[in-house]
Image 1 (cartoon, rainbow, N blue to C red):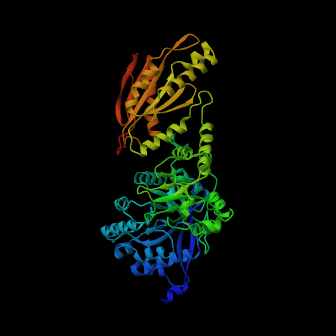
Image 2 (cartoon, one colour; image 1 turned 180 degrees about the horizontal axis):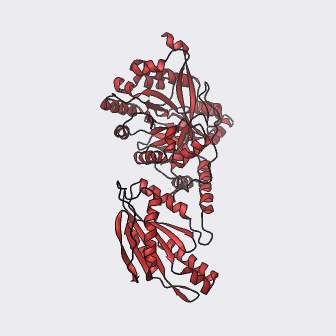
Length: 550
């Protein structure tokens, strides 16, 4: 064996799930005591491929059940066309290829892109997962990144100072079905920034430094209460995925028992076929109870573990937390503590989710939402609406943002009394909620002011329901004013621009008599009067500049 291997050591750094606080996997880092073998490996694909094999074997000797991240240069894959020796090493160690993620790192300059994509395809066919490493601080072309279709994208922490870039990468990851990880996180502020930008995973000195032994515990700062509320559809199951304990479907009960007794944190084992598709689920407590009974070990030790397992409960990687709860509820009370397997589009297991993680996160979400509700109407405030506006802008969706209020509300309060005024506000809020569709968000931002975010096709039914109703306070007739701005993709960059466009439209609507509705378009001068009687020529225009102009 070459002399450089005698001084080569490996360290392990956890990749942390920012939602559950658990370790999602271990990155294996080469630590040569002499020389610069990594610089040599960048120039020598054969050497880099051998390093990948040695890194995996070093991790396998630690008997860790966690998923592993093995680093390889992009040029190595393009030159070798794959990593057959690594695949052989994984099989020989009794691990499964889908428990290993290939971290493909820069440089990408002068790397034949077609050869690289073909090598990535070969790795996927073998079952390996793909990570695009060094994004944001490397030279990976955006087109190549999308063609790679990685399962994970790692961003350099320096990009956290440019949150728009991180949010844009999160949107790209959501569209391609990838997870987003920020590496190099050193401070709690960086961790909070990664969370608020939408990263699901992170690694860095803050959580745990690289160490010769895999970290048993990591430090994850608590979630800040000021983070934006989760959308109504619920958080994605991707945020809660934990590593799964996997064994082949042919494993014996004795093998499962050995795994469980040696790993007290493992709550269950999934038995998978050769493609990685779960076929049976073995629950820790029920399995060990069967094995510990009288004659249990003698009866079952050499028999297939599948006979002591249950039909696995699975959800797709695109499921929401609420959909997972539906799966748990359908499984019967006896299996409420079972892990739920998360599978990719091929049916292969990518991890498991635990009911406790889901319940805790959803409870925190409800507490945050309740704290932001207006005490009079129980509707969310402006933060919830503006956060959803930014999400729709990032997704490139057309939307309509409306501002609704009561005409001369101070006079209503002065004449009818504040109790009648409060009841009027509650009635308007109930009417907006009643007509709102699944894609409509209604917010009460204080006093008699409401914000409504809707798809354009839902505008006219909503307007008719509130403007045509006979409103009154203590017998005094009341009218409402509605101002709406339509925002096409690219017409506004964030919720602030949308709000600045909406303000003059509201002023124009308030200048009309009777129930009124004024409509404008972001980036387009002028407005339409859809309801109301004009008492003076309205001067307001939708004052948002067209993209690319000052």
